Image (tube, rainbow, N blue to C red):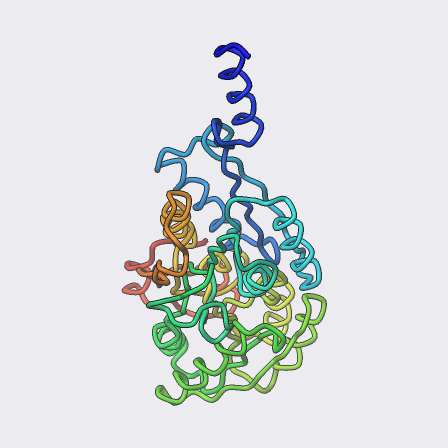
Length: 319
């Protein structure tokens, strides 16, 4: 066999095996449901990677799937991504992250918008995650959020917390809210809802029991926020939220994270993984920097006067 023939044959073998020409990495993003905060995380991931030099379609491919609020669908999506042999899975929300972590022990999983990754059994510890999972936690500043309730509505004595008892993220949040509430003299009553269709009834059930409603970063509740706001309006009580995007949808006020920034932080971890770092060696990042959003129009409907000092420090005021 001539030398040129041998070289040509070897080149063909290398190309066929994918050694000579690396494939464009695929970043597979999934979320348990679609709502503004989770969409902001997704957009932040894509924007962050673009800023890092990963041009979509050239240096990286993106796929996105929403589980539409169904845990079983989240499991199916995770298995689909594993079958497709994607480069990294970005799982937004606790249920999606748990599904991805259960589906693979080899493909890197980067979670985002997960309140308690250790409690959700995604990582061994925040400092040393181990395994193939790491990401960004949005552990909420509940003390600041409850202080906001007291500042705007000082007569509130009892808050009704809407949450999904089937979501680990929400169970953790409820325990933390109760602890923070006890420190500022607020009582807590629970309004459980296991799916979005139950949110309105859960909110109505708190009317007469609570002076205000509080909605943590619970994807089930946030996806049906308007139903909770409508029920609260009928009872003439305000809705406070941990998610700032909820203010434009009817919540009275929120002090929380900018989820676009959370997405950008997540992109930094994804970039490290794409460059070869092991997820288990990358510490979990905790979201930093809160913003105040207030809804002046909702305050007027409820007959609540917002302090000028509060309005002055708000990042966004919804009329």
